[in-house]
Image (tube, rainbow, N blue to C red; front, side):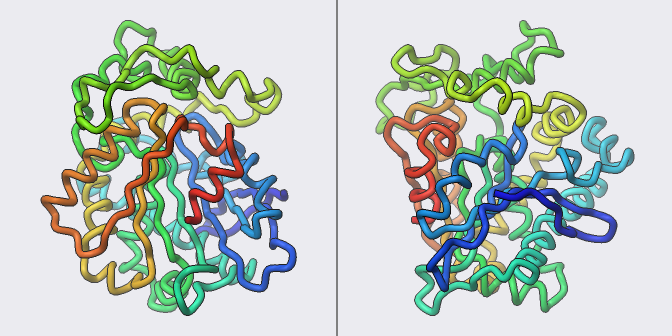
Length: 345
């Protein structure tokens, strides 16, 4: 597993970790994984270590301002933390989306990533957005129509799957459920300086929810964690944890991004999933939402919000909704082999 940088636009580079080309595989699938809040791309290092034997390549970039990647400009950081105008937010999310798409395009050209097979079942890229990373994965697809034609053509020949991995309703542009007010990230009883660290630890827990077939938000465990499985954070060595967690300006910017860009998030999601121009541009791209049944309540709430909206939006391409038994928000760390298989399925 190596770490280096790739250009992602004019004056912008994103650092990334790369499991490398799998041995004895002429056409392999590449997962490009976009990390979430408080955790760097190193949170994907365990799936990187098993990728070779599975015949898969895993590339995980660090988003802007995370270690090794170009810092956000002071102007962009101000828009994140102070809100900005709608026009400024539209411009910012398009810029970030173009960076992700350009990074992917440069990876295709520089690293020789395999294109999609003729039958659409192998090769190509699985674009995986975990938690808030799903917002950027969606935006990269949604804003691809404003990229140069040759870039769009390469992306179309390579991206065969868009996977939203436990995206909360707010990441999709929907209102946060009233029950989520207990979450450490927004709980006013927790000092503001401790909310990000509290969230980063709490989100690694397992939860015992009620009957999921009822699709009732009140049946979810929004606060109390399960005693049946230890939180993932207890399975991450302290030295690695210090390398992968971030609570500084990059995390603060993410937090404010999460709560200020609902309009842009929903526009990206709706376009990536339902816009005829996008569906035509990515004819072999499968749409998937994955969540565990022992995860934080927001993962399941996101699934239900997406299902309800699909009925309203009348999507022309089916969405593969998957609830994985026994899995929490850190499936990729606790069971990397199964997670890898699930992401490429």
